[in-house]
Length: 149
Image (spheres, helix red, strand yellow):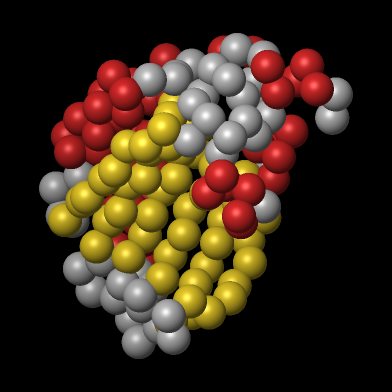
């Protein structure tokens, strides 16, 4: 991709992203990684310098540490709300969704700390069934995303 694509404002990024799914092992647990492949073309976008990680502890993981169908449906509601919030506000992108060891983590890059806090307020309002933790960090080079990409 040409260099200029990485410098596009978040609102001008593609509306739809392409995703890949891979499985590996981490800490003795199977790990599923959904990677936003499209984000490779805009990783390091200067308009999205803040990483937001949202970790959700599963309430009833299976023997592999993954959610069952009922819990997956609950997590899908949370995921859809995040996607929609970022899309409508043009404030961020989900780039990784990692499931392992009884946890699911959504990794996003957002415009600002304020946008990250707004996303967390949405998650707390959407989620009534899970313990949710988060962190917000400066990551203008998208180092975590690049580790997985």
